[in-house]
Image 1 (cartoon, one colour):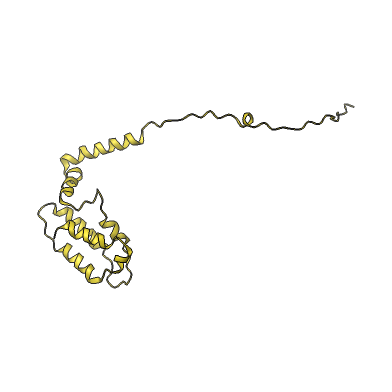
Image 2: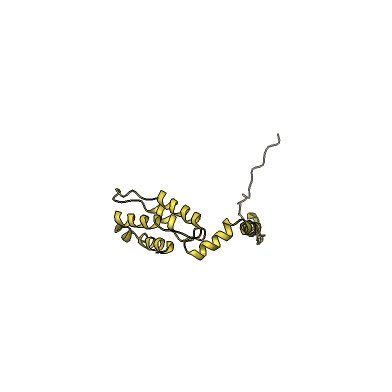
Length: 150
């Protein structure tokens, strides 16, 4: 079995709460045994780091209702954590291999800065002051008492 098929099968088991309840400690042991017994020709360091991270997040088999959230996040399909061999090769070129990673990361930073510094279209609304919008009628009494100047 390949690394991707092992991960994707367990990913489907963790997909819904009904299938999570059906996962037994033996299923969990089988999953981790398959992962730990794989032999890799290429990108051993990538696979080793991925498997070590999954081993670190292994739920305790004694728990009757383990919390699967961290493991779900760890094996989720992600562009930055690929499991398919060709995607791992591309990931290696983009981020790990020194000759290609520096220009690629610089290009990504430049694209992100363009997004952040993009000019914002400002729509000017002519806002009239409140006094012009609404007139308040103030009653003026007709007979005002005059102040005495004495």
